[in-house]
Image (cartoon, rainbow, N blue to C red; front, side, top):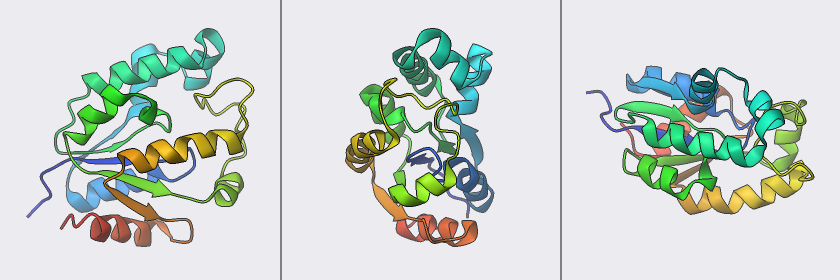
Length: 169
């Protein structure tokens, strides 16, 4: 029998939310939504363009609007890394299904992300990746129903860990 709730993925940029989200959607027989892509489609701009033209707070506001407007039932939703700054957005997503924090240590994220300055990450202009990591860790843990540490796993293993950790099937 297919999984009937939604599954919401949170975590830092580079944690694998989009990649694992697609694989989880296939495994659970659900639709898939990447909220970063939804923001770009709605605004007709890249995340980086929004940041450069309007600033990080404007990007967070757009992100909140997209989260709240999302029909979130029976989907795997890969959120942007900054979704957790929106209390209203996260409360709405939590009402649709469990929130899974894809935890990846800072050192591994550094290996995965080579375009920190141009990736479209909603952060204060002077904020280092380390500071952003520390700040967001607290929020990810606050909203997570399940935490899966997936730095040393391949995609298939991580999908299995999310399903087993969340008792989804």
